[in-house]
Length: 409
Length: 167
Image (tube, rainbow over all chains, first blue to last red; front, side, top):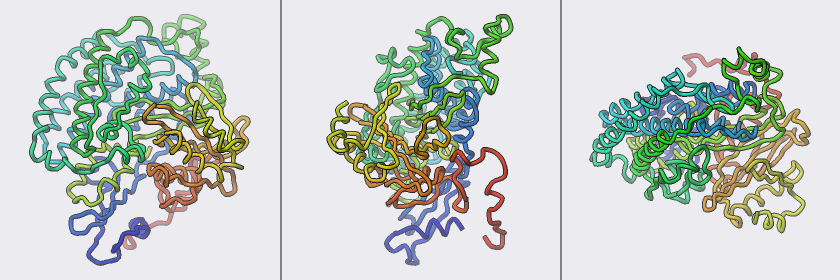
């Protein structure tokens, strides 16, 4: 029924003629990776029109954000871009802390920076690996997942959970890291260049991979800006914008000299792949610089600020800690927020992940709007597919890195 | 801020401004928004260099302290050369919340506006494809409105049932 409706609004010259036919791509298809549906109008194997149909995974995250408090919502934010969950938490608490006016401690800044960059590497590894997998290069996928496993291990040692760590809190982190984590990160820093080199050698000059990605899905710089693109997709089209450089947050201000912004000019699938590969190396440099300069000191803001959950030692052994614990956990107390609103954004692996948070004085958000990069990038899809072959669908989908949970929220 | 001089010269009296942390905002009340919004955004895009629509989202200010209008659509504009940002808040009210569509200015606004319509029921005049985007087309109601319940039985119990023979 929905299929008829979607094709009914199409206004393609000759769409009523018999030689065009409609192909339903998804909602379950290996190349979609998650649940999304494309309605392709085909002329032979050439795509005349592509209409994305989304919403299969819509589960009302933003409605839940109005019910759960700032810390509880972390668990939901985790599940948006589940390829790099830590980055979502960091972006969410970045906005909340901006709203409440909290300045986090230097150690917390560095730890969050390291985790955000590891998440970026993990996301890009999956994107590049899965793109290769869809285009027939299975080996790259296995190499990429081997390295992702190491990042999962680091996150497991840090937060106790591999996939959805829920590690950040308002004003700090759930717990400080152990020395073992530092050793693991150092080990990752030591071994990652080899993985990156392997991937480059498997894909960069791979004839099949290049033939299927070069010149496919070209996005010009003007179109990229006009269509609100951010992140690697915009940078592959020559938009030199990166929030880590333009609006430095966390420890990026101090680590400016450690990394560069990776850009390309052609804006095709191959350039998007190259930008992601380049960004992984820059992230690796940030992690290497941050872990060696990791400041000592507390990870949470002081107990007297009354914004962060006190550690269990303070809760059980001091009256201030106990009071503070209950102040934040009783449903009618929680945080005192301003009657105001703020937008905060982080540069995550997919692009600018922003939160527009409105508060009415209580401890929960009145409105927790997400700016999901996948949603904006998937809107590009019909534009990128025009005139391409049906075999280019996996290449373009893979290069856009659509995460359906973030797309539908 | 230089863009404020340009706006003051053209739209004096139609808007108010506010700021919080690093967000600078331009407010358009429900009275002015339908007439002024498109021209104001066009002016910001063409004359002040805000070439990217970074963000477009809806807010329902029902029962919010000191709120005068109910629905709000927030436009987040970025100047990709200087990195400057400005937030334009346009308000609308029941019974027929409607604002002009900006797809003509930014193609990126297409899905954003469909989502706001889906979640809040704010219509965008001149939108090329005003369908729901996240909820199914049979769905009744707008889930992110403040008077829409968080839990409980809702419209899904009234969905038409399609049997295998009919599909």
